[in-house]
Length: 148
Image 1 (tube, rainbow, N blue to C red):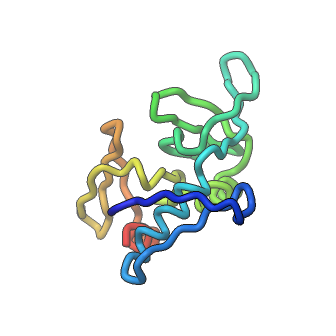
Image 2 (image 1 turned 135 degrees about the vertical axis):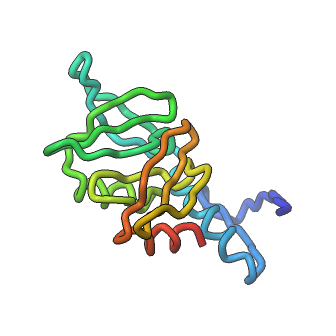
Image 3 (image 1 turned 30 degrees about the vertical axis):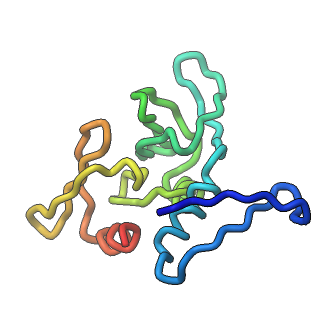
């Protein structure tokens, strides 16, 4: 893909105009997601010192349910608490490149390195940190849709 940047004094500040070929809808969607998630943060709780911290959304690897709150595991390996239930966290994260893979977990789709089918019509995914998780049959359709 070739990127060409030009400036225009007539355009309003904070505005970018991007042209793509009609056949490149996938690239258009990827650019939209990248621009929307760039700089977005969420407030999480550091359980060690009980302080709130701003975490960049793209640094989050997985969101895992734990009773009435969620654990956030970052790409650096750090763990934080997100003070919402998983079904409410899903609303916050799924519009930012995350996908629910089972009843307990949401993963960052950009961090999926490999996936392969397993027994009982499930899919095993391997994330960028080497951890493996299973996508339940119920969520496979959403996973395939997110990859296409």
